[in-house]
Image (tube, rainbow, N blue to C red; front, top):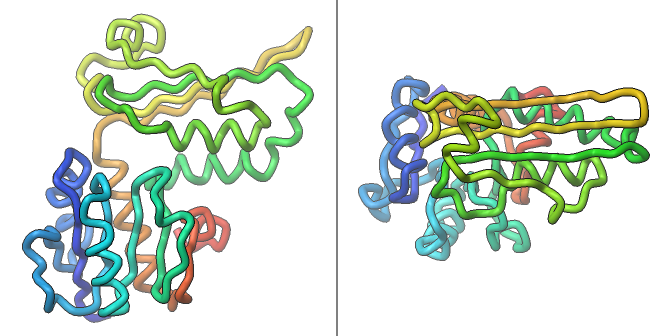
Length: 228
């Protein structure tokens, strides 16, 4: 397989983490920042991990070079538009978590007649919609406004037992399903940035191994197809 070019667009924490970790996870690829790519980088896999300021420019680049765009943001305008190049929507890149979400999407209707609550926790500065929690809620028939979000570091430590060293970078979800006589609790926890880079590396490998159509894909299609 020829050496691929991976362009990471964004200047925030996630983009910096990916630029630091992806080269080690993708030995057969060149990983560069969008600001350093220039207009002549050619066909690539462009990972959008930014706020959206550069999105139109990125779209034009992908159209011109027939590059694949991987969108990591939740609620991006990319979700509503059609394109003549492949787009992969990845609001979550942790493969284990994605497989858990696929399991609930397939069987969540079994619990529609039970009392279900969802609690999510992320680092205090996260202000965006908790896309994974919303997806879990949809699978279980829970209104998104009923999701309990925790951003207070003290509550995260005391109530959720998040280790202090991961308060600045974590994703925690707790699902509680109850009836009059029983209770089931499902918890997921992701600590630190590494699982996201490792998962994205697997998703990129799947993109390189399959011929994608010029349309939007959900990363859940990759899970369901057994590509990752």
